[in-house]
Image (tube, rainbow over all chains, first blue to last red; front, side, top):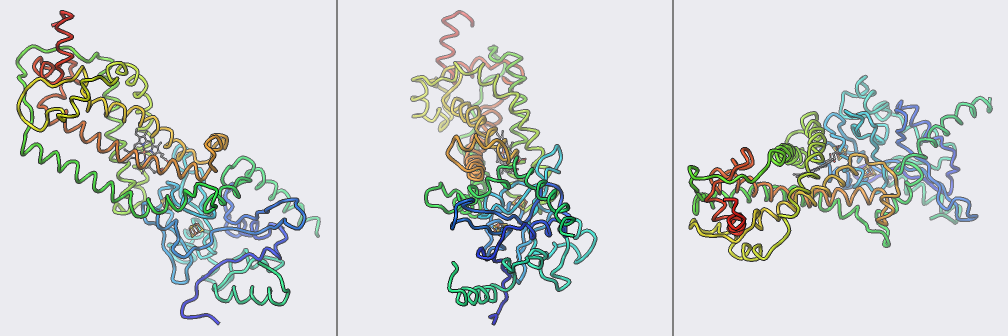
Length: 188
Length: 298
Ligand code: HEM
Ligand code: SF4
Ligand code: SF4
């Protein structure tokens, strides 16, 4: 199915998302995120309006031509060959520019810098760790569990009970979604 | 079993909801923040910020830090400095209080500008602790600037108001295009000094406000809402304004430094000792000199 180069993407099927917060909680647990940081969030639109209410799960979307990487003054982002957008927390100065650039509000800032200022940016790594040695203690501490290196699916998609949250090569994801739409005759 | 899972999950969700409640960006406001990115009705500052920050700001700063000093070097070599006798009488122009406040502002700018530039050119410095340190210092110098900007604004305000002299001064560019010493139309401060005063004080207050917004990031949403902006668009606007004004302030600061250190030989002494050379006042601030003379102060 996949063409020359796999490009990893998330997709949340909002016909299936039941707003259970499983992905968000699993993420926080797997990566031992500090209080106040939530790399993946479940949001609900048109809450309470019958027929219109939808929920979906969002985190960093690992954009092509990632805007965050374009604006970072210290160039601390790097984009893996499979399209996962990662960054180096030891280079990051916590300026916040990536947040201003991001269409999804994904970058977050723990208040752990000197004098309680915003510290190094934190965001979803698609469970692919960071620039430190793979599966090292340091990588785990700074970026969380590197499940991709262990050949595992990102934890959020792995725990999604309704299979709403999909992750994988962009083309395979859209093939799955196409199949769902045509078999049910509905969807976006 | 279900009960146990619930009793574990519920506090987690409540805890994240509690955090969400006091966060403008990652809490309930996240939808309006995100929607503002590309919605036709919003200001769409996201793409504008990405465009300017990724392709233009650092280039504009590079041009300013190279071109402005080059122009002054050429001025110094071709036209040269104005030299006034330092042996004649001196006129007391700046009180001790004014000199101390000016010193604080000067040190603040000497930190703000290089550290600001270090952030802008952070990638060439490799990022990390060096640039992070620059960012912290930038914040510390902001405190010094806050202390100095209000008294400075108040004690020089009257003398910095525009006068007819200023129009004439601008037309002859302050007489700096020739070495000839003749009477230049200016009060205690000339039009150039006045421009710097307004850029540094009013512009400085805007720099403090936009800098504070970026520093705090997640604060009372009513402030952004009163501008009709989402919190993220407010931060984007702050970053855009801070960068644009920083270009202006940097260019003016270089000019101010060149004038006091090089273009008028020894002019800097007046802000250290409080005394200006008689001839310097007589020619470069001729209206002020005449006024002092009429009042019998010299
Ligand atoms: C009156 C002058 C200025 C004041 C009061 C001021 C204040 C501030 C403050 C409080 C911040 C936020 C720092 C943080 O987030 O930790 C900031 C950020 C910044 N300033 Fe300034 N600044 C001034 C002038 C300048 C100048 C002249 C430049 C450039 C040459 C500059 C470049 C920057 C940059 C690039 C940032 C963004 C990085 C960041 O948010 O940390 N600033 N400024
Ligand atoms: S942080 Fe935002 S801009 Fe960057 S890749 Fe993720 S979603 Fe895209
Ligand atoms: S906060 Fe860090 S990652 Fe984001 S733009 Fe600034 S330096 Fe780059």
